[in-house]
Length: 94
Image (cartoon, rainbow, N blue to C red; front, side):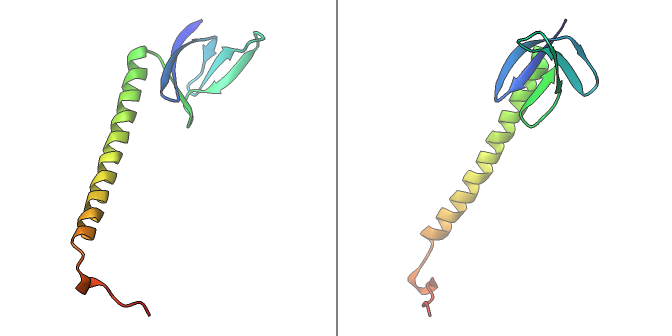
């Protein structure tokens, strides 16, 4: 068996793999039958080491924080625009 680490929904799990190819791993299901899974999907990613899996999560979380910071700045800009509104800026509806 080959030990791999899979990141799935923000968690790292240790997995025993029967065999692997460049793009797939083969694991045993509950019945003892081989099941093929892609190494990388939208939902999970397999890694050879714990450190690689951890670094993947760190990078993913860092990107999420950066995106939140960008959204926060955009919202601050909107707030500034609202705070700067003057009655002269308001057009009649018609």
